[in-house]
Amino acid sequence: MIIKISKEKKGVKIIFVQKDSRSKKISFLSKGIGNISEIKEYLKLYNFEANKNQSILFNINKKKYLVFSIEKNYSLDTLRKSASKIFKELKKNKEKEAHLIIPNEKEEEIIAIIEGANLSDYKFDKYISKKEKDINLNITLDISKNFEKTIKDTITICNNVKETRDLVNENANLITPIYLEKISKKLAKDKKLKIKVLNEKNLKKENLGLIEAVSKGSPKTPARLIIVEYKGDPKSKEKIALVGKGLTFDTGGLNLKPTNYIEDMKIDMAGAATVYGIFKSAVELKLKKNLFLVIPSTENAISESSYKPGDVIKSYSGKTVEITNTDAEGRLILADALSYIQKKEKPTLIIDFATLTGASMVALGMETAAVFGNDNNTYKKLKKISKENGEKIWKMPIFKDHENVLKSNIADTLNAAIGKGRFGGASSAAAFLKGFIEKDVKWLHFDIAGPAYSSSENSYIPINGTGRYVRLIVEYLKNN
Ligand code: BES
Ligand code: MN
Ligand code: MN
Image (tube, rainbow, N blue to C red; front, side, top):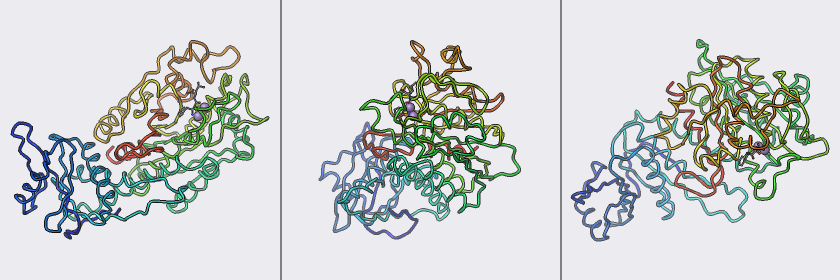
């Protein structure tokens, strides 16, 4: 799909209408259409009642019209979903050209329309032998040229959301720690950024014991800690670390996951894919921010060398961890990455993303990220953006009891609670991470086990990898 500003009016004319709930009269939101009375006659003829989200495609004298009815006081996300519906309708009808008469020239509405259409134009069909033939749809908008940069930036972000989806959807035998290293190196090279990658030898030498322990089950797929730096605001002391769980396949380790739980575990690097998408967007948009992309990456596999339940392991921070469950591996690799980046780069704010716990899905379902941490100020700003952008978040607590359930009698902490302590698993996982956050460092942790993945297509969210939260954080970085 190509979206551009143009006065050309080829193909289907897309018109937004609205119905007055009392008089039932249809009004045209799109201005300057011309033959309104004729269009109204056709709408009547086809019994088009302009109910919420209703659309109709018809011809008048060989000219095609798509009329879409949008609710009164629509939100930006309604607009996004409407654009998705319109895009899919045009695709279904194999249309090649369309021009959209937008209701107004509000920047945020133009962005929402482009996002809704563009994010719907996605399919992971690489492995399908008989692909549906893709028709490239050209959509023109007759609006001020001033919006050219807005459109370009929006498309850049959407492309990165799709790259995040691709990374999540791709095979675990391809997306290994080495692969994540490769794409990070390419990005660093293209954009002239500083990059540091710790390989298995460096990890051992520098005592990142937790990452090393998890990676022990996959000697042929060694671990990496990837750190890329972007200095968009050299004068500022503010530094944000974006940390993502890059667990490229989670078998559960010796606490092996059973059938019905193991199948989707290639998605366990969705946190890494999310921060990669955010970071790349920020670099491409040249945002005035100092950022670190931090990806601890390994498999959690089974072999005779796998780490074992009962092992006590020394972390990079010096804290010792008693392993009660090898399937609680994400928090381990994150903990070492968090300690390492704090020691080496002293970030002022850390935001981490991880498909960390099934418990977060039990609590909030499949569409909402559970957010934890000490930075309520940043959380509030994100919440405000979230309400309009459709990527849902909900603040969750870390109470003293969530920390207490991690007490060990042979080490400084357990990696996962046992017995009745297992309840509230999203909070105790966050409590474990909290134990590796230094005093006065602002921190937010996103548990995205649910919303990183979707079991069905729903408007502009495709089936499988969703790319959620790339837009949310980029929007935050843009405006704060
Ligand atoms: N990667 C999983 C969490 C997960 C589950 C992500 C389902 C996406 C979908 C994580 O490593 C895990 O196994 N967590 C365990 C923790 C438990 C052993 C304390 C869980 O949630 O069951
Ligand atoms: Mn696990
Ligand atoms: Mn995992």
